[in-house]
Amino acid sequence: MTHTMTPQTHLDTRYSSEGATAPAWPEAESLITEAELFWISTVRPDGRPHVTPLPAVWADGALHFCTGPEERKAQNLAENPQVVLTTGTNTWDQGYDLVVEGEAARVTDNDRLRELAAAWEAKYGSFWHFEVRNGHFHHGGGQAVVFSVAPHLVFGFGKGEPFSQTRWRFD
Image 1 (cartoon, rainbow, N blue to C red):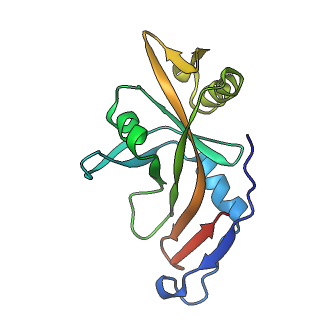
Image 2: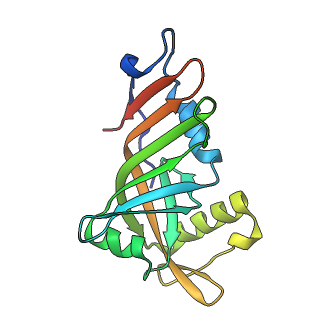
């Protein structure tokens, strides 16, 4: 499934250096594609947040991740599919941080899962080789569910001169 990527772009001048410009969406999309580690934020049934790192793959206009069906994030998403994934650098004055907000949708089609498994291995190497059976990734003795997050909003934070804050809104 391919999502239309024609976001509305807005530079928030309140939080941007004078003369800063909003990056074009393809530039931000490239940073998401190349990022190796993301932090996923979900909400527990009692309302407390849950955050954990994981690898993810950008494909066809959506960010994809996998997790064991018994893991806390999978349990949280079963109750509330709203999710935030962040990536960037841990410095304040250089680099670019991105925040992807959306709704996690389970991917169960075996053909689509095979495409995603190939993307995982191409990006992360043979350690991340998955077999696909019965709507799941299989690796070693375990299985994983796969989620797709088509962004509703993406925020970008340029760090260092010029500092910038950009929002991309997807309809």
